[in-house]
Length: 106
Image (tube, rainbow, N blue to C red):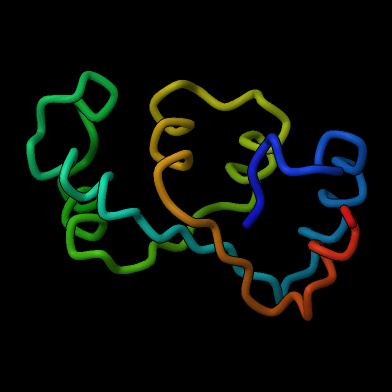
């Protein structure tokens, strides 16, 4: 899983960005059980104002296709607090990579 704190991410942001340009790579987000409980409770300030359709997908535990730009902003440390909170509480999966992005940072 990629996070801003993963070893090698900061040093290889441009390489990662270049790999993300591959049209075959899709980025999905899967919520953690903790995030699902937070969303169901509905009281956390960082989830206020979240679109209903977004909430219903996450509460169901299904993966959500996210923009590559969102992932890059997250890895760069430039993401807004609400989206960062969400991404910190789940798993990012890259489909169609053949591990090419993960190998870039190792």
